[in-house]
Image (tube, rainbow, N blue to C red):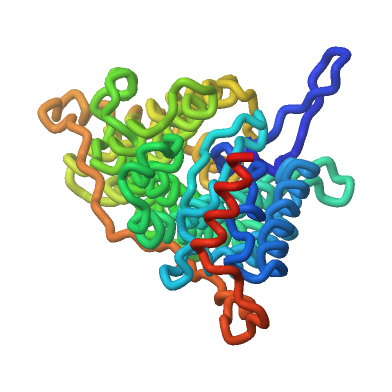
Length: 435
């Protein structure tokens, strides 16, 4: 899944491994062989063409050799490539549609897109940076064994770094939607694979913010200084994020009943998900799992705050919240198992963050409080309605992504010998094609 994750061996003669997944990383795409030399020959200096081709080939080789795990090296090469690629998008150079850029799926090697547009190449390169960044966040969140103790933990520094990476990935995807897709004509966008549609890109961006909030909630739960109000707010914010990437698709609604929030963003996201392959189905399972966890946490903390009231109605509402949280927690466990078993098979890490605490506390509190206030539940049946969760303004926002400065090689004043006129270049190309 493009995740740089811990691996566990499977039985049998053939050596296989099952990755652990904390941060979901959609399928990664890498450049496929594309001819940059012939279309650009004579139009820009040859050394500039060579650098473009060389960097693109370097990205392919490193990605294929390492399975995308050499994140730092790939990101550095992509940033350098972008500084050169920007020149192809400038109108004054007239090169925007000359090169047919091809991209393929890293895992299957299957070519997925082939588009003669430099803005598409820019979109693909920044999307790859976003996927690498998500993959790095996932690697940081995989528990590591501490000095031979046999106990696997994730350090606080790794968690903070993971939040920063999630915000950066989110910013890359927002940039793709707002700054690049607008430059691509509708007829070209129709040829994109479904994962490149703007609704899908935006939803994955929101999902990254949701996972960043999940980590922050874990910090709050582990902190003695964090109040119940802070924990409830973070749980509700996480729920809002994941509700925005969930859908009103019939079979999901039938499974979650009235628990599903319906949003326009979610509809566009899931209508864009390619359900014909395992990754689309697995991604949907992940969203459902995280949505259920977030809602369980939100109702639990909302119940604790309501229970501080003195009126019987407060205690009844609190018990309703605790019981709802218990049901949601049970559903989330099933959703986690479904996610892990949906191809490609993965492992979930040991319980961490807020869920490590809540898997114990929710059943315990729900049982104790329902027994404590059982008489009220009988007396106040009319009040046995699940209260609405409070609405909060979202705290996390994507980091602003900015393209690197255009490489100085595009400064025409430094071009010693200008290329042959476009008319002659096209004539040569026609002659070669005719030959």
